[in-house]
Length: 495
Image (cartoon, rainbow, N blue to C red):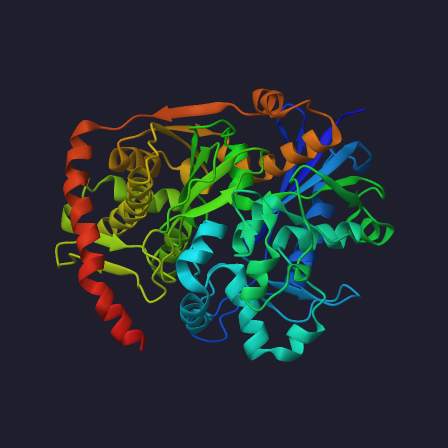
């Protein structure tokens, strides 16, 4: 009998479901897409019920693989996108679609709360600025704009805790997702009732925080019938997708850093204390006793996906990056600002827009693609520079996400940042991280050192090219200057 672990990832565009053996080998994996809804400018919503239906479909398909049996799955881990605010009633019904991490509808509320409660007071406790993407402003938006939902809501859940509820019937809030709540004390890792009251909220609106590897319940009879999973299979709380991906990329010790190349971009630096910076994101790691100083950007692999959809015709991603490879470093003066849905860290500007600068008649599609790849790398470098200003020095990066499958894109990131980049088995880093949590939680691994040692292997290492690095140093300054020159224009046209 095999010992298998199931990892479930609730991404922005699709769920991923993967089954691993205890050595980290993939026995089977499936994806299932769902929609993002944009009902108004600045709004971005998803339907949690559609996540659940997609996951049920994907799980049923992985269980059809010859190497997989529901009997052999010893535990389940779940990771999910950040900053959901899913209102459920006492009967576990979802009351409306959830705003997701890209949603900025609560901007005016943020301005008011910062004045009334005090921006510095909130930051001192929560370790994060009070910004519309986070969970707390969304809760206040419900209170102000959807009072009928606010009054009926029993609890608000995160993406992974919602799926945990659907699997087990139990309500949970893992500690890595608490960073979206500004009444969570990031140093003490507990709720602060006084701050919740000052914000006009209550700690009772959310479940009590639990460790990410804690078993929250077992697969129910109803969930087993929907998914094909074995009734009674343990389910752990799981965690934030970026944090699970960080673990799945082998980052579990102080000083290690993950580079994220999924739909969104960014980085996560592992620390042993709550080291906050107003322009970055601070959260608990899924590994106990550690924190992650993070940079989260809107522009990541999703930028190339958008470009391919709109301008790539029938070309594959490899064909598109092949065109970019023919263009020299610096894209001969073309620069791309990857702010396709505003931008998160470190500029935090919901009005920011994607921009191609430097186009002329001699430029080709390859120039635009090269500039796009470089623009995402510049946004990573911008976050790393911001972290350095907080006293955190990064020497190398462990890459994850689909973007790291591209040798060219990874090399561009190495050249722009000046950092060596190690690439583990990138496609499965996030689901593997969730599966590792399940394995530790159910005792298959005695600790995280054993889990990482058994499951994670570096497939390639790429080092910076000094000549390209010099080109990108000059282009980086123009990249930063372009945003500064355009930010007032962005705001003017948004108004």
